[in-house]
Image (cartoon, rainbow, N blue to C red; front, side, top):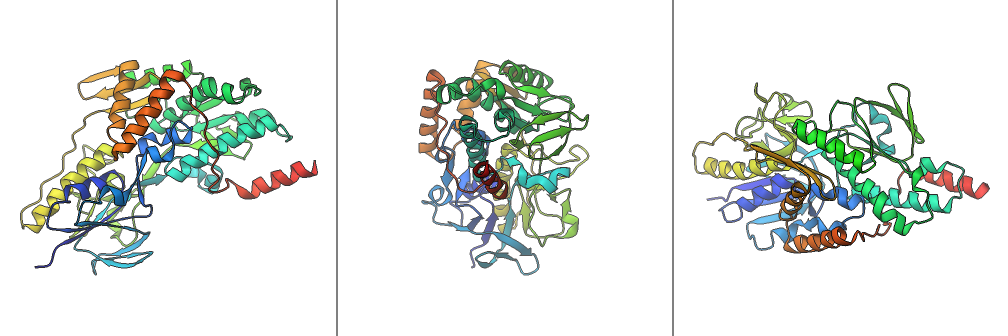
Length: 431
C-alpha cells in the first residue's frame, strides 16, 4: 500500500507544529519554504533594534527534523497548485501530493500606500529586521558625520505607522535604545533631535487586547518618551516627511510600516476560496471547493457569524490548527470522520520595554514587571532550539542588569532605496 504523502507549504508556526505531530506516523511529510530557517517572529523587533542577533531567533528547518525519518524539507518558491492533478508547481519543479496543507502566513497590507511601499521599512521577515537595523544605525553614522545639507531631524527621527503589537514593541525598544544605548556609543549626537513618533489611526493601541492593556501600553510608551498620536491617519510620504490627513507633517526619512497584514494565498485555488486575501476553509480547515487541500494559520479563515473575519492572525491559532489538522488527516487516512477545530484562547501579551508588559489571560489581566517576566519566559521557552533559549536568555540577562547593549554591526545585505542613496552621495561629492 502506498504511503500517503502530505505536502506542507510554509515552515512557520503552523507548518512546523504539524510536521512535528506527524513525525512518528506512517506518512511521508514534505515541508516546503522559501527560506531554510524557521523564524520566531514575535522577537524580530529585537533583531531590528540590535537587542538580539538573527541566530538567536532563527533555526535551520533541516536541523529541527534531523531525527525525523519521515519528514523532509525543500527550499523552494511555490508558484501554483493544480487541485485536479494533485500537484504543485515550484521553483524546483513539479511536486505531487495526496494531501496539501497551505500554511503560507501573511504579508504586509499597504492599503493606499502600495505605490510607495518600496520607500517604507517593514518587519515581516529576517531581511526586513536587518534592513531596519542597518538604516537606523547608518543614519546615526550619517548624523555624526554631518556632511549633508539635510537637517539632523530628517536623519534621526523615526516614524512608526500602526499601533498593534509590532508597532508598540518597536517603539518601546527604540525609545530605550535612544535613552540607554545611543548616548554611550554616540555621545556627540544631540538626542533632542531624535524623536520616535507612533501613529495609530484608531482611538486605542493594541485594539485586540483589553481596555486595561491598551491604556497601560499608552502610559508606558509616553513614560519612555514616545510621541503617540491616536486617531491620526497618515496620508502620504515623500521621502522627507510623512503627512497626516489634517495637513501636519513629521520630518523623517525613516518610516516603519506596521499598519496591517493580509493573507498570502497561492495561485490555483477556486475563486470562491479566496475571501479578503485569505483562504476560506470549513470547520476542519479544508479549503472551500476542494477535497484534499487544507489551509491553516494567518492565510486561512473560517468565516462564521461569531467570527465574521475569521480567527485572529496569531501564532497560537496556527499552532493549534497545525496540531489538530495533523490528527484530522490521520483520521481521514483511516476512513474516520474528521473533527471540527475549536480555538482555545490561552491569552495574549505584548511588551513595551524593560519591565513593561501587558498580559491578558482569559480570566486574569495584569501589567508591569511581573507581566514582563511572564512575557520573557514564555517567549524564550517557545524558541525552537535549546541553543536559542540559552543564548537569548544570556543576552537578555546581560542587557537587563547592565544596560550594556551594543548597537551591533551594520550588515549590508541589500541597499535601501539604492538610487536615492547614489544621488545623495553624488550631491555630497559635488558640494
